[in-house]
Image 1 (spheres, protein in one colour):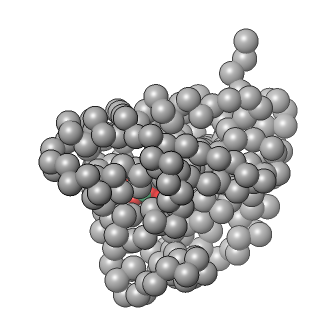
Image 2 (cartoon, helix red, strand yellow):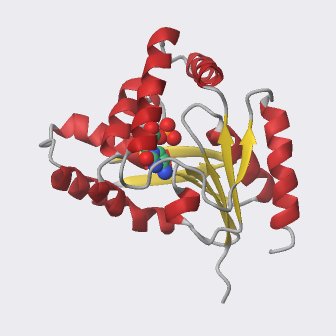
Length: 226
Ligand code: C5P
């Protein structure tokens, strides 16, 4: 039996992958994998449990996370230990810790099967850093979204403000640069486009324009596959 199709949306922090992923999944009626949330949930759990800063301990914790994703009318609600944590995991503090645990190969390995288990019929839209390179190397469509660091910091700033999360643009810009460096330079699954990814520089585009570029590729590649 054929496996359901996957669309991978990879790229650096603040580029708008999450929003595009939701819009595409909603349009197609497909499932969503917000892979960054798994690293964020691991980070939240680490900060709450006061675990040893030891890679194997954190990997064990990642493997045993009690997480539930509820797709509600195209929105994604995330529960950790039965507590709704959507807002909590979006803080910059959790994001920075997430990028530190994400640099640990044993943690990435611990989360691999969990990510692949999201692949269900009729299809999956997966958002992350290594969706096209590691998690779903055979995906039907791989898109790598980029934008300048300044533009990404502005987007993230607006997004967090809209969610009522208190942020400072200068701190955000600095965090984003550190996160980029860590994500791109780590030995295990570094942030980079897959060889067969379509690269879209979104600096000059608004969200509707990016969405329409992505949907053109979806129509070209996926409509013929499904
Ligand atoms: O995408 P998001 O900002 O929620 O991801 C949080 C962190 O998790 C990233 O900075 C990155 O270090 C890590 N991550 C990753 N691989 C993924 C998704 C996220 O390493 N597929």
